[in-house]
Image (cartoon, rainbow, N blue to C red):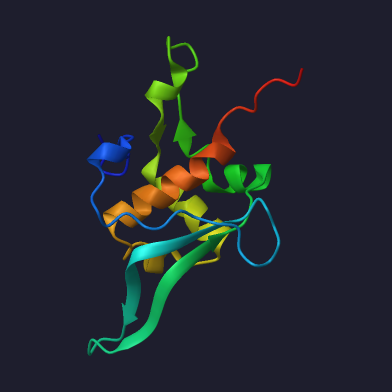
Length: 136
């Protein structure tokens, strides 16, 4: 692994510090995702003084241009596997870039996010990057 790829975790393997279930923000956009972080992101100055504290992230619905701009789909699956959903994994660099774009949060701020929060956000966004079911 390159250190940036995150393998899927079953809910039973997650710690008790898992964030609350995301909800649509008050903007009324049903496609948007709101995640309350289990550990706030703190942006500090050189002296350690907290300048900004991020407790929630709001993600807008992605577009094809977002996938193009981050260099590809951040969710990878083997469509030829017996159970394609069991092969889901994230391209960490692309997912981090996608999170930054969709939340309008600078990448250095997101880099301070806890690992469980990053993984939770990635799973909440993953559905946007999977094939749509065929219309009947």
